[in-house]
Image: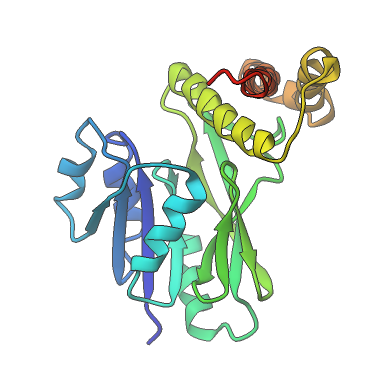
Length: 249
């Protein structure tokens, strides 16, 4: 029978780690790759039959690619600690690794939760990620919002996993700054420059896109918060890029 390695990247995920591990208990091997958490993440993970690897974080792709290299099995399932594999998706995963001959990996859609509410719009309605794949055909690329580069065809699961993206608003903002810094470094390496459009026009247009065009208003107040912070994320990214362009780190 084809076997699966599940990989869970972590940094201070004590409120998520146990549920995350349990949701991939079907895997034949579970690897927790931790960026030196300072909370109880490792202590809690050690209660389970998992392999723990500690590695200093540099960027999301490098972290995941390193863990993939340590995996014993050909099929990899990547699970962010704030995600949960639902029973229906578990069945699809097991069926895929057993019978799939045409696909190198599979997209799975996510149901996003924020402030205790399931977000149906605000740009999240088409949210999908590659989570199951054959390691010989797939590799992560990009410093932030990393994507899978594949030499094979990708399929789709019918059902969705659950995504509990942010512990609280402070966590949300800290993630925005982390992603913004990494994205700014990526743009800086490509020689991108900042102009007035990036600072004055692009952030409010991003708010408009998520709240109006992507129907964030139908999610009520959480939709307004998410849409507004999307604009803030864009502003943060280009301010950090502007500073990098001037040699300020």
